[in-house]
Image (cartoon, rainbow, N blue to C red; front, side, top):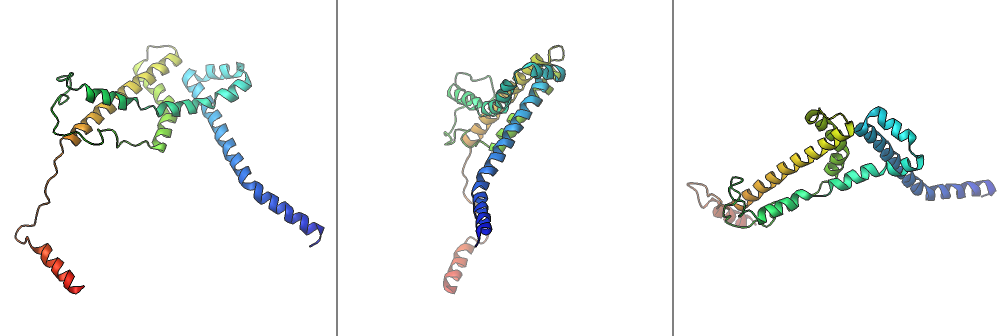
Length: 212
């Protein structure tokens, strides 16, 4: 082949072997810098634009490179904590003692659903990711709407986030409990036969067997 062709062939093989690792490095680097950017935007949104920039300018660059990417990670991990299911379990376990507080809470159920009202609520990766990443914006918005008298932007955002989590959690708990009651009171009905021609299915089955 000659030395030039042999050298080019070896270079082509080396590039082909290194391409998957290089692509993986590019993807990891992109995700990392996206997390850094998201963390910086979240800090400016929660603390305030000017104050957030001032805090990040005074902070150690190494601390920023290590700390900012953990913000979206912690948000996603916090979103995965399904504390509403634990409240629903307590609700259903002690429903007889709390009879009268919520309509239908202490009724005698004809049967116990197999899924217990919350087993079918699967974890959606896209929904968890989007909900976690948009949470700081929602907390900031709720804080501005409900806690206008609070002067500190950080305190207002924290109070807005707590209020949003509590309100959303209670609505979700109530919704799951109502789903549980609906499943518990379901009745399986017989399939209604067509009036006038009850033997249509048997005649069709005979015809099909004759054709075969």
